[in-house]
Structures are given as C-alpha cells and as structure tokens.
Image (cartoon, rainbow, N blue to C red; front, side, top):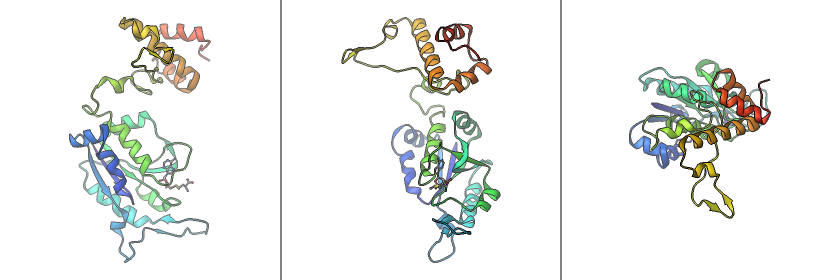
Length: 252
Ligand SMILES: C[S@@+](CC[C@H](N)C(=O)[O-])C[C@H]1O[C@@H](n2cnc3c(N)ncnc32)[C@H](O)[C@@H]1O
C-alpha cells in the first residue's frame, strides 16, 4: 500500500505517520508515503505555484505545470499504476466502498488543492477522479487526503489490534452496509443510566440480536438510503424484515 500526496504543506502529513493506528501501521511498514511539493517543480526564483484567475475574480489558482510535474514524479516512484485523485468539493462524495477499492488497488496519488482550486487543464490531463469529503468547503485538500488515507490504512490486515472491529463498523458493505449499533463500557450505572440488560446477559446470541436490531433501527431512522441499499443487495434476513415491520419500516 502506497500513497503519494501532492501538497504545498507536506508537514501536515506527520499527523498520519506519527500517532495512533495509522502511525503504528506506518512503523510496521504496512504502508508507504511519498510527499511531493509542487514548489519543488517550479523554475522561477519565487517558486511560484499559483496565479490570478483568467476572467478576474477573487483569489488565486494553482498552476497546472508544477502539479503535472509532481504527479509525473510520483508516478515514476510507484510499482503499479494508480488513480490520481483530486480533492475537490465538486467531486464525487467519498465513501467506504471507495476506501475498499483503494485498499484492493494498492493506494493512490492524492492531489491537494489550495486557494480557489487548480487549473482545469491539469484536471483534464492528469486526474482520474475528483473526490469530495462532503458539502462544505475547507481551505485545502490536505485534511480530505488524510481522511481518505486513514479510512484505507485502518482496513489493512494487521493495522487494527482486533481485526474484527472494522467488520463491525458502519458502512461495511460486504457484511451489512448498515450503521453501527451503540456502544457501552463500564460502569454499568452511569448517573442513573443503565447499560441495556441484553449486553449484560452474557448470552452471545441475544447480544447479537440486540446489536443487529439497534443497527437496523438506527439506519432506518437516520439513513433510509442505506437500508434500501442493504435490502436491494439481499443483505437483510427474514428476521431483520420481521423486526423492521414492528417499526413500520416495510419495503416501499
Ligand atoms: C477553498 S477550496 C476551493 C473551493 C472551490 N473554489 C469551490 O468552491 O469548489 C481549496 C481546496 O480545498 C480542497 N477542498 C475544499 N473543500 C473540500 C471538500 N469538501 N472535499 C474535498 N476537498 C476540498 C480542494 O482541494 C480545493 O481545491
């Protein structure tokens, strides 16, 4: 697994190679990181990476050429071809299915925009996918790139202490595609709020049913689109449908 990141702020990525699960996986050499600063591919004394937009208007636009050269340099370091993904609020919303595709594809080259964005000709020449974190605007693509990398790295075999924990997470399409159920830990009684009795029963089958029903109910309330998808993919059992019917959540 290798990520190459094109960024004006390579120092931000220490957040992934240092602490936590991604940092431990980095030290175990489960993934590699290449950082490419477009400034290193400029040829003027000011190391210019941006200029004013044609047609006028506020802000600056990232120049195509330093970005293209950085992508080419990154490509040359990779053992296999990889998607070139531009972080952009106008792109396709990133999701768990994309994370799983990157996991199986061995990573990606991630391009982080700044200012008003990047010259469209760079996108047309070099970018295979434009990816958004959601319907909001950040000041740069570095945080989206880190979010993408984290979502993939934690799926790498050996990255999590307990390999089963990623399987139980929300959006795991190969299993349920549902939202995760609520979690509780000690104490049993926290300010008069008790842990649900099912979780204290020690009865594994009962606990599994409780968790499944909580997942179904939460997904129905908050993300009916995911419930519909799980139905269409044949991931819901007869028992699931029976439970959903008690909530009034029958198929359309
Ligand atoms: C200030 S934004 C530019 C926003 C752009 N003018 C627009 O309105 O679509 C600067 C850079 O941050 C990154 N960015 C901002 N919001 C993002 C989001 N929701 N998802 C992915 N990248 C984002 C992109 O790389 C973008 O080029």
